[in-house]
Length: 266
Ligand code: FPP
Picture (cartoon, rainbow, N blue to C red):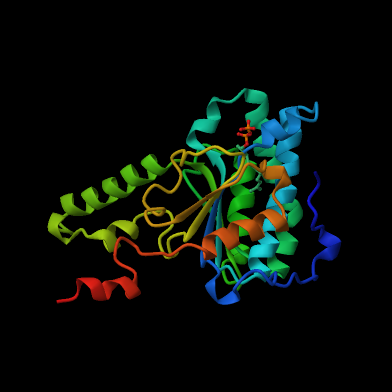
């Protein structure tokens, strides 16, 4: 199935209103997505896996546009994990070229749409041309006022936590910090996502029910929505369903709902 709402650059200024089923006041501030199922989408059509990644880019453009138009402040997507290097070299090379091409092609629209793009992860082993494009895209959109778009690239949650611990340990060794001064806020300030609110909602496509080393710290209280939809088929209808699911949840953050609290008052 194609996206029912496919967004191309010639539609750059079209605005997509919030569906009536959704409460605009209770949109998540930050949405995280594990975009899974590109390979299966392609294989199901008798196509090479890489065609699934190409189609996945279109689903991502649609999702970014919808999130921006619907008032979601930040979108963080898992584009390439630290484990993805173990895929066949051809697929890894294709993905790296795809990231380069997309960045080159879409930078103008990102600027126009006021998107602030940021890449999260250890970018050092990426191809030089890609690193240059990432730098250019990050710098040239850093003052934009619209949605924060975080692309996790060579990202692994455990590695991020270890790196934060190392930075704090180094400060302690230098005498700039005492171990008992380390609290959750200070720890979070050493993560790649420093300055972002934690995701309120995590969506994983393709029916898998794993976190897969994604935003291990940041997802502590996120609501989880799993859909069988394969990522390239993820569209406005699928996003609306996920948001309806999110808005039906009662978020307690480990406490009690306010209308239950009275039962425990002394
Ligand atoms: C998972 O599907 C998808 C990926 C590893 C790549 C996702 C990347 C994109 C959609 C492109 C994003 C581009 C930019 C510039 C941000 P899979 O291959 O694991 O699918 P499978 O589980 O069916 O094999």
